[in-house]
Length: 133
Image (cartoon, rainbow, N blue to C red):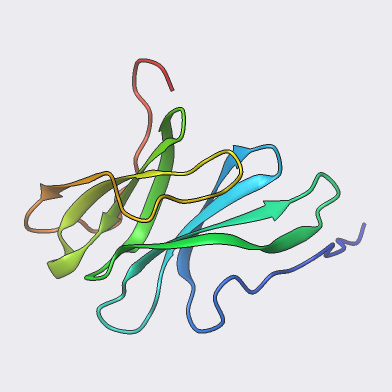
């Protein structure tokens, strides 16, 4: 059995390290990743992927942390709200919340952020434990 690539998209022509993709709604997906150039800023992009595997262009982009956004882990919270856990400035652990519409539009700024580890954030992974999601 041979695997066939249906489509590809270069979502960032310069850097795209540690990407994590999450389904938003319908054909819309979000990709959280970091760039490799110092200080390794964190980015969030939305794209469309149809049921046949055809990938559309980038819908929207947000730089969620200019000081560092390494090893992002993204999760749906409620409605249009998503949380991104990542290793931020000084490799500390950070959590940021963002708004992504079902059409893929990303709000121009983060909603809130919290430094959850002041010494080493490493490679955080966020999971849902309890309550609505």
